[in-house]
Amino acid sequence: MTQMTSPYLPRFSDPGDIDEFVSTLGRFERGELSAEDFRRYRLTRGVYGQRQTDVQMLRVKIPQGVLAPASLEALAEVAERFGHGHGNVTTRQNVQFHFVQMAHVETAMRRLDEAGLTTREACGNTVRTVTADPLAGVCNHGTFDVTPYGEAITRFFLRSAWANSLPRKFKIALGYEPGDTAMAGIHDIGLIARVRDGKRGFLMRVAGGLSTSPQAAIVFHEFLPEERLLDACEAVNRVFDRTGNRDNKHRARLKYVLRKMGHGPFLAALHEEYAAVLARGGTPLDLSVSTAPPAPPPPASTDDAPSTRGPGYLLWRGANTVAQDQPGYHAVLIRLALGAVTATQLRALSKLVTDFADGSLRTSIEQNLVLRWVPTHRLPALHAALDAIGLAKPGARTVADVTTCPGAETCNLAVTASRQVGAAISARLESDVALHAAVKTAAATVIKVSGCPNSCGQHHIADIGWHGAARKVGDRTAPVYQLHLGGGFDENGARFGRQIVKIPARRVAEAVARLVQLYADEKADGETATAFYKRVTGARVHALLDDLADLDSDTPDETFLDIGESMGFRVAIGEGECAA
Image 1 (cartoon, rainbow, N blue to C red):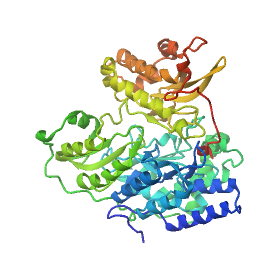
Image 2 (cartoon, one colour):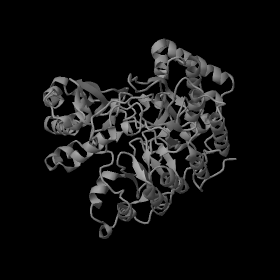
Image 3 (spheres, rainbow, N blue to C red):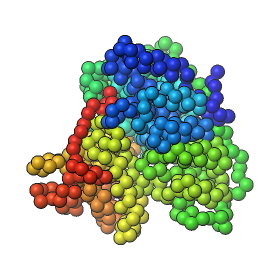
Image 4 (cartoon, one colour):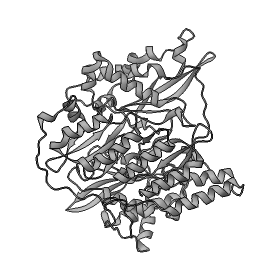
């Protein structure tokens, strides 16, 4: 029987995992286990090396991004005691803590376990956190709530030995059309809810991925009936386990199996394995284990109260709230600064989710938070409560709401400090008065930044994407960013941005300002930012930005510094464990 952490949300943790981790750590410390064997093991338990020695990143697995009040309290305590006072929401809806001492990992894990949270299979060559549209169940695009299906997939794979000793990591996501809200096109398995003749099912895409060599996922099933969901997922996992490259981790993802086999033979292998799974009897889909909060009753009022609106409320409501399918309720998008959230804020949110919402909170792939089932008439009061804890900043899911990876602040693979560039972009777009009209026009533009080519910040699928690199000029090395333009999703799946020009780190914010103004000045009537950046020519962009790209012996020394850096820029790339 499932043990509950609250009246609403299920437990994914198991104290036995922590006992095993402590025992394995002891074997390593006694010299009974090699450093490489322990590294592989700890990664599967969410304990991940950093650029800095003797500290760890601890990643908490948050299936479908769903958190209960008790979960938020636990995260707050771990942040406060072991994570320098804050955590970070990731593009996979997880929460991770940096600079955690190995001596504190057990205590942190046990505190998380008390709230049903686990770090199991949050890293390593495993089935990673299953992500889902945080608006599932409240903005369904005419279909159905995918959350219980995501939970069923999570439970099916979690702690399954046959599924979690893979050639490389394996990622699954669920969402909706239009726009591919799950980013299904870049996942090993991407599932998009569909209804045909009154029957529920999924469009199933497979073998997508990013990193240095992006691959758009291909269609495995145009319509997979819901009852066959786990069977099809198992088939894809088993084919990967059997055919993935175990000798070269840089060519080990499922996308490389697709490329090696070719589309026809690859799909034939999947269908053959799928038939074999069914012949063995398959796995029934049981949605009864899902314990999502029940829908609240109709609200007392469907309007907010003008007399209680505080300063900035109307701007916040227009940008950060979404009317639900259910009349009288709104979902509220809480914008985090580059995914960072403090222990104090987490603790305050644990109370707000009960006072204003349905007793739950969800993380998002944009590194934000989402409250659902907020009665419309209570939006002014919620705005005031969020403002009191520094979480009422408008502009969620807008051009200024930049996604970044951790970058060189903590990651061994990173070349540049991507978070610093992300912050500089946001600050420029929000503070430049002359740019105000263009920013408003380009509000829906998506900007993503990675500190290296590996695309942890998902730069390939942004309208405006950047990845960190280095450029040598004489005896000096400059931190630069490669521009990727026109990425995203459409009815055909994922589309990856074109590489156009490299810009020094300290000039990236200016480059973004010019690109935003370019859209405002030259877009066709009714043309979206996505469509514009897809069609604008490389020649036009070079004409706009080439002066910013120039570096020579006369360039001031400060241009050869990364943002936030006062000493000379130095490329210090180690062995990144995200690639392990």
